[in-house]
Length: 229
Image (cartoon, helix red, strand yellow):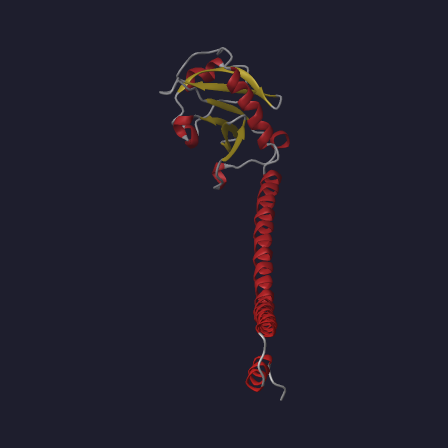
């Protein structure tokens, strides 16, 4: 085996005498070799560490990628399902009650106008007598029992003559509007009929909620005040 520089120096020093200059030069050479060996050792150690990290990354990366992909796929599926569910419910609702939005829009428009009443009376029987130009009679409904009648005026709903009834002023200073009109399916489309066990539907227009239902052959459309919400 070849001797190291240090061993060679020691052997040479033991066999011969060196001048101080020669000895200093040899020691300098020995220091350079030792420094190179240290650098090489550190380089090897760093390479080994990088190799271990690379190996760990290769082991972890597929699992992490698979987990991330599965999470994204699950999120996409959830969003898609909710979107389709909302679209289906909205689409089905529109198909079930095709004229409900138009009815609500007209009711809210006139509700906000608050035009002067033709008749001021709190008795339904007396209002029936006064609304002599209508071809139907005003009715009571279970869903409008708590409507505190204050009067009414002639109006129309989708071009059909109607009675626009107004409540007395509520505690919060609000009025409610209750429309009654002869229910004509060919004009108003399908609407929930209370006698058949169906519930009133609610539509919003300009921030105002409107309940719509059919009872005793009469179409009712009632705004919902803040007090009742």
